[in-house]
Image (tube, rainbow, N blue to C red; front, side):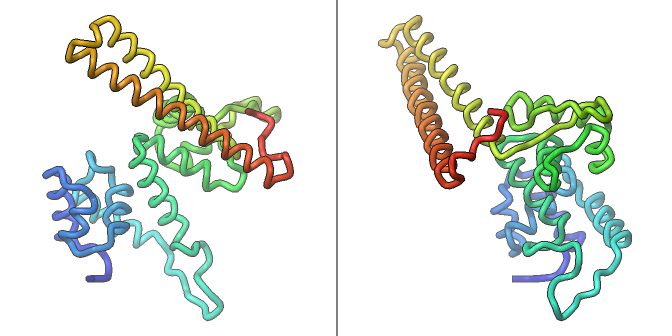
Length: 244
């Protein structure tokens, strides 16, 4: 398997593969590169819809020039690295995974920033500076995350400005919100099946959809509640944060 940095020709093949609708796995196989190399490359350079080979190559060269060379030591990895690579690489991999779950790239970047901040809390201005994007982009991303209940707002008494916070229960709330959406879809589909008649093709189809999402929604709720009970038991009953 070839090593080293991606070449401009490699990037052109990635762009060509994306244009053909190939998956990252298929592109990685075509290049004989690790899948993580392709997903990071695409995630850091505009995502599947915005990836451009020449622009990605220039951006990589510019980042390399700006990044000071890290001197290795016998004691371990250079400062500013993690067991999986640099902090930037970790953020890029996390962002790519979140994009794969259906989040937009900007929303995934905001959520990644919050998760990889020790405090788990950032203001809109801090997010703008960290991500080098417009306030409107951050506002839109926060709106999406709030809708999915993955972040919450807190008023900073010192600055009187909102801060966006994630906590230990963020994914529980997001999961439950998704379960409620499945339940709503199930109810709609079953109602549609009754209206159209279960004997009709469309009615039967909606009935099956309703049964499926009802089953999935109930299973999601059971799994989440079981996780919370186990988490509470292992933490001595203190697993749930004050914001539930």
